[in-house]
Amino acid sequence: MAGKRTTVEVEGQQLSLSNLDKNLYPEFTKGEVIDYYARIAPVMLPHLKDRAATRIRWPDGVDGGKFFEKNAPSHTPDWVRTATIPTPGSSTGRDTLDFVVVDDLPTLVWCANLAALELHVPQWKVGPRGKVHTPDLVVFDLDPGAPATIVEACEVAALLRDVLAEDGLESYPKTSGKKGLHLYVPVKEPKDAERTSEYAKAAAQRLAEEHPRLVVAKMEKRLRKGKIFVDWSQNNPAKTTVAPYSLRAASRPSVSTPITWDELESCEDAADLMFTPGDVLGRVDEHGDLLESLLKEHRPLP
Image (cartoon, rainbow, N blue to C red):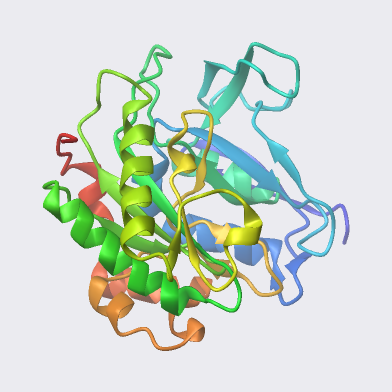
């Protein structure tokens, strides 16, 4: 069974899928991972489109080792879009890398077949000829320091939403798929790529000053106990955040899931905001894409 392959056609591309019965989670097979990504694609692909993807691969499943893959592997099919992006100071010693851009269903299925359980993308897009644009999203990663949980992160998200609203900005929450929350703000591309990072840092610092018992905006781990770290550094153009609807590697398959403000404000237990792939597919049937506004409602930074 180990080497068994199945050839499928996906939107006109031939893909050879392997080891579909292999467990990538204790009770969730590679075939189920591919099926989830194929079914979630209509709402996920718009959030991946034109963004250079970092794939985190677990070839032996979540109990085995993982590796981060930024560069397109040598066996990448010629129909997969790649973009050559400057990577100064890269650990590989290279000045550029050829990133995969997940623009279509065949590419998403191809990534899933390589056991890329998690897909992470930056807050900026790359143009059709490879031009790197300035960011069109601001993201805040709300990370609870134990014993705080996502319940306290929800409280901070609501406070942060109000700060952003004062500046005329709309924000949209999703779970990280692990213990925290992400808050996204669609913005008009500024002239300077560092502008979104500066804005996010100032907002996080303001929140930490106004709510010192609950919020910390500094990186040091020792400061985070019982508080929510508002990580603004994800807006650095060299960093990425797990994409909406991506699976996360954990003992059970969970998903980075868009949620409503009502759900966020009524959260009383961390389990309230943990969603399986099946849950998420059901939610999309019911709500559509709760992050659809990220694709179109861009407002200028103050």
